[in-house]
Length: 516
Image (cartoon, rainbow, N blue to C red; front, side):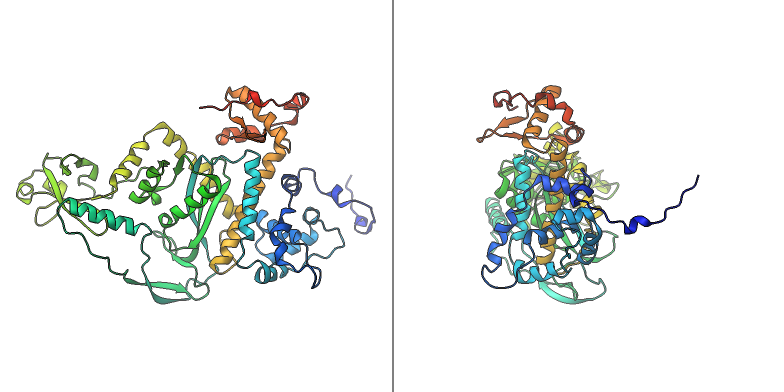
């Protein structure tokens, strides 16, 4: 029999606690369980007057409102306030009851301008959340996965002005110039004098957001954008990030992001990057620092029908290349860019049967360039064939690529609504903090919500896999490593019933041994 609702429920008066209306497994409960947000008071204490002025909005509430926006991918602060007004779970999260008015949507913007501008509060929030994840043993910083993604700027691509700017010199230019001159002297060549100032180049500057950069990649649409240069670990926790204009190449910021992570978490054992970072300097930087470079294969850019560069064998003893016809290409010079040039003997090449596959030069001369740091790049290529590098590189799609996918799809960062490098950097740190917080909260909830439950889970996991991946630290707490997606799946499917029988037993640090 059909029934009809008379909508009397709209006018019924009932007495309910807000806590009873929020589902027990809602994300906001997991967040509240994962971290104590009172640390925010210490970060902003010097930004508020202790004796004068009206009572402010609770700074923890202020930050939680922003976290709601980025955790749930809400496009604007205005819409976020509207959602909080009608969403019981959001009200519970910020501690407001049914009748309390939610702060105006301009409140955070005014606080940013008056209190938080030019401070490191957002970086501190990111660092604190990452510290919590480290304390629970979820972060595994021994291998870094680094890449960059472009986020569209809040700027019209058709509104720009052409300006002349100075080309940015490479950070390692001084070191490169020194080694170039040493190589030229070794070969009996005159060293170069002081390099002239970088030339001016024409660039398009946005009128709406001058600090953004014009991003052009292949046949894609040209847009003004910002680049988010990011490093994460095996488990997808973001360990460090830096924002630059969209026209800054990924490789120019690599060292900055690496140093950022090393400063906070120590030196990694390996760094996995894509082809954009496969340069002689980055290879040298990593190998000299004792870090294993994990780089992909890059296809030769030689024309079809011609010999590839690997068909010419470099002889280190004679400092010469040997061509497929077993003739030598001898050293000619070292140019200002750091490339050593090798040339063939045209009198021999003129009658060579492979000339049409070797060069189209009118003077019958084949030239090959070799960077003075090419040995490091070749070593990185040799490591590419090892099982360890193959295993690490295969994880890029489930680590750093997944981070960028979630950043844009789930957290609303396909484009930014803010303008200016400082504001966009603030937004980036807040979004990455939210991503780490969400993962931390979910993993803690599934593992029982405490370090003790997590330690018991790791004991259960080691029994199953016959591995020991937990070691006691100086405080006799467990520091555990999570290895790959399979372990994450085990953790997320972990049930309380698996550890309840063991809760009465003490967790003995003596059992946990480190593996080689």
